[in-house]
Amino acid sequence: MRDVLVMILAGGVGKRLSVLSMLRAKPAVPFGGIYRIIDFTLSNVMHSGLTHVAVLPQYKPLSLIEHIGIGLPWDFNGRTRSINILPPSTGKKSSDWYRGTADAVRQNLDYIRSMDPEIVLVLSGDHIYRMDYMEMIQFHRHCDADVTIGMIRVPQEEASQFGIASLDATGRIVDWEEKPAVPKSDLASMGIYVFSASFLIRQLEELTGDDFGHDLIPHFVREHRAYGYRFDGYWRDVGTVQAYWESNMEIFDETSGINLKEWKVATNFDEEGRIGDRPPMRIGPEGRVENSFISHGCRIDGKVIHSVLSPGVVVEKGAVVRNSIIFHDTVVGESSTLDYCIVDKNVEIGKNCRLGDPSAGSGHLCLIGKWAKIPDGMRIGKYCKVYPLTDLSKGSRRVIPDFEEAGEPPI
Image 1 (cartoon, rainbow, N blue to C red):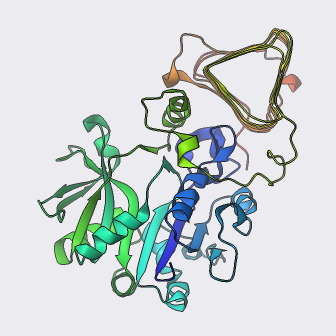
Image 2: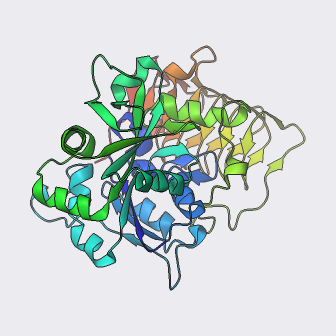
């Protein structure tokens, strides 16, 4: 639809994802074996019939830009459809960078004017869910709203992590709190905003706040027509390591609400190192797989239990992978054991290693950064962190105790 312009915010640093987002933008983090987190937002846009999209990256955007390409997997390439990457106008001043969600959109007001939309749909690129945005847009129009915010109920103990709204019987927002210490409601913002374009342009020209939730939404609630659109499907903010692990594991739970097949999530299979040129997975004579997602190009000669493996992972003879997530082209050496681990791409794990703890649970995950090297016989405990590019074979340590880290953060 030409009257709707979609703007996807994809510039967050994602510090809470630790080593997983040190060398990539959070929306580019792999998910579910063959996808990236941003695939869910892009697929929602595609399935909603929206055809003009802008992506606003910032932090370490290269892998994200390469993944999106010209938008072919999501049908955004053609005479009547488009996807554009709009990085900040980076210069010598910190003000050249996007300073928040509202500032990112403000810095692209000329682009919005050139597209001349009726509606601007602002989305986050780092959530896992399936949603028809047209239903929300229709609600916005029906209410004659200036801004409509997607809302979902969250556990009361998690409500302080979100913008929290109270609605009247018509859906109009009557109270708004951004990450309150003592929430008045459990109705949380999903980071989805529908704006009437003329209203958005005028407000961003007149107001100075950098963030929608913290700075501008309270003003909209007081002075304008702000509505909340209730969503009752599956939605996950995977901004923490634990939430990310749990959402991946919910793929195996038929009652969780996440169903990648039914959702028809699209991804870039032709990106370098992805599925396009991979052979089918191979399970050797002694290999065993239980309740797991195994991608193309994987070779399993050991055991994989309740785990998610991205393309090209090798689990050698006698090795055991349990309750773990392993990214592309990592090798788990012979007779090694991984429990409650998340291991990034191209990691080399030697023979007879023990990573994680079978009793740790999702709250004490062992994290191994991209391109790390783990030598034979290494012991790495629960809630440990190995930074990207760390070569542990160069040191004398063969044990990383619980709750410790190894290596140095990459520059």
